[in-house]
Structure formats: structure tokens, C-alpha cells
Length: 94
Image (cartoon, rainbow, N blue to C red; front, side, top):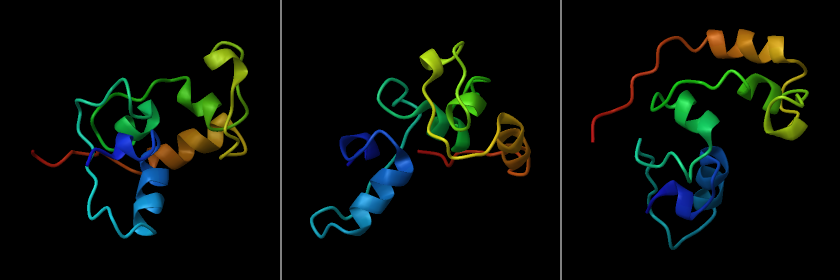
């Protein structure tokens, strides 16, 4: 089933499915732009990373998503450093 039918966040969808017996597999495709987390799509190589994501996952910024933040990184700079270590990501074929 599409990961977005479990959760918008791919990481949460994977964790949820890991504890369910009734779902054997989930998938993510480039055709999920409106229902899948934009950060996930970028991390998986399906989309370009929106520059505002660094604020959303760290401290927040009024210019991006009205200041909403997940506080997953201590600063936008730390996010950029972490993201830069990933290198080029190429999605698998269909």
C-alpha cells in the first residue's frame, strides 16, 4: 500500500507498519507530492529540498509554514550539515 495511507511521514509509516501484522509492505513514489511529506520526498530523491525545510525541522521561521517546527535539529545550520553528508540520492526505478 502507499506509505501515505499509513502516515504522511515516511519514517512514521515505516515504524507503524513494523508493528502491524496486516500490512506486509509500503511504497513511496514521486507521484505522492501532495500527500507525502515534502522533506521525505527530497530525502528519497523524488523532489528538490525546499530551503524552508531546514527551519521546519529545527527552530521554525515565520517565513516558512507560519513558524511551525518539529524541533528535530538544534539549528538550521546543523540540518544543512547533516543533509550535506547524505550525498546524491537516486531513487530506484519503478
